[in-house]
Length: 475
Picture 1: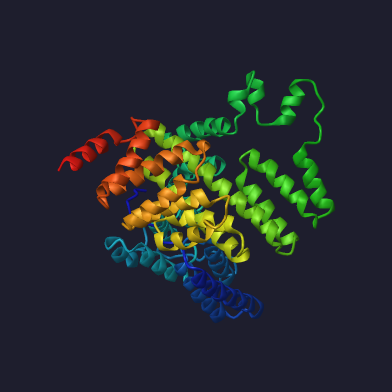
Picture 2: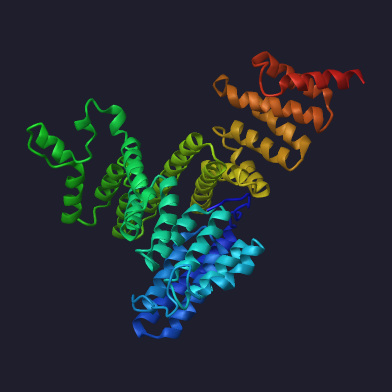
């Protein structure tokens, strides 16, 4: 799928989040009542409420998962058969989405698609269109959720599985990608691309797990530890994974066993299993906040790993598409971290560390007004005062409040230690450049730019700025 420069949605405010949560709770109660009473109209009413939640926060896949689960229950889990049939071949609701595509109204397309799914939650055509819209909005997790919906609708369709495989592979989700390519192969036995990609992804998967680089022989690269033991003439022993699985079976309320098991699964890049394990831990704990935070931290690590894979792929491919995907996945990491730190700021209002982290993520998302609010609160923390001022300097510079920007950079410079050399260079550079070109304060510009020259004369375009300073001083 092609990408473009469309910006994703801005992080929602605490007030919006609270309103959406209330709507979501109401939708859940309605859906539960619909299932209990078998009243179809209640499923539809719940769906409409879920649509409001999804559209209100397109990045929150929890809302979408609840929405699609409600629809599956509405139809009793029985796939609706279309008399028109055929992926890309029949009169599904795709035609109704063309006006949103032509105007590049991606949120509008998703909302319209959700309306179509109300009548047929297995419409792969619609899911694919929605996945494209999610990609345009740089919402990777949302895109993957919609692609999963497409697979559920057409599990054996070669085109659906090919589309899913390429996105999953780019995210580093090799097992799922390989399975999709195998389905392509089953549908089209002569498909050369499927053969090539299954082989390539199997190698990529092994390299990612780190077994090949550290191996002393081909035997050491084998994924099956029991088989390795057998080849060495050893008796297979209980693995740590087996130990914790057995412990969970014996005592399903001991949350630490789930957490230990999830750690093992993460080290082997078995992210889906790790997430499922921690989700069960949250359930076993009765919704304990700390356990939920362990799950959130794991989800962030997973997003970062996917971003690393995409960045490596972009360096190898050197194509615009791979670069766009890498940027999209980095934006996804920032979005996920923003959501997590926003929730923790509400949960722990006196924790300035979370306020600083949220401020940084909001600045990265170009939400400078909100970022400034949290960073100003964080600068009261002695441990974070230097970096909070530096980040404030960045925000003020980007909204062209140049005097405030210089003041924040200078405050940061007075606090940064010698260990923060790179940050100090950035602060000197921007304080000098903003003073030179923004406020035309030649004295301040000379002070900061010359200090930077003493540290690193080759830094960015410092030489040109110093020439400009000299020229302006002569005029």
